[in-house]
Image (cartoon, rainbow, N blue to C red):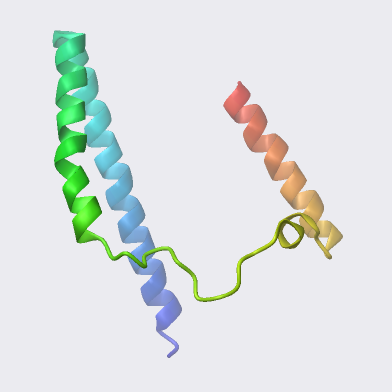
Length: 102
């Protein structure tokens, strides 16, 4: 129906917000613990990851991320029929690579 793109956008934005909030909490906890003791920070953060691991292994669907369509070949990825899309992709590559390098 017509409301599906809007609903999908809301779900994606909600998940992205949760992910970014959780990353922020992790950065905050890690930086607070590092001021106390480095080894304590490492052990605590590893403990949090190990605690979340069973939820990820047993709680998620096994078919999550598996497509029903045929596999994409390297030619499908790197051979572009549209020149403008090629130049846009190349510009984005250099933009983000230079940002990460800086």
